[in-house]
Image (cartoon, rainbow, N blue to C red; front, side, top):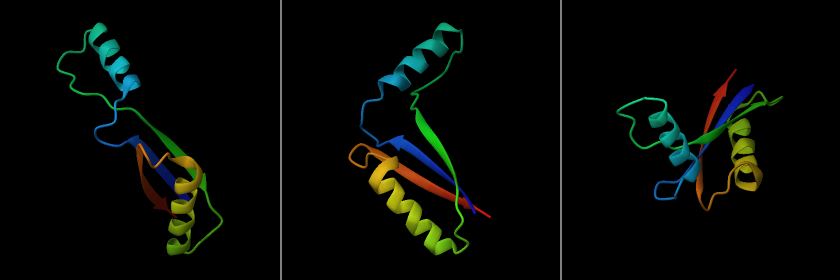
Length: 80
């Protein structure tokens, strides 16, 4: 089973990297770009075939390592 975990900053948390990207886009001539937020995508191959068990394992991975849950949120996407 393949999984994708999307980790982004929670609403209200300052995103200096996102601001820098936004300014760079403006500098390159892209007009009308609003707020830019950046995050990370983590792709994981799992041996688990049971979706509920895979989701539970991924949640635990996110809580323990992949996301700083104080300032970040995460979304899990599973594919067979």
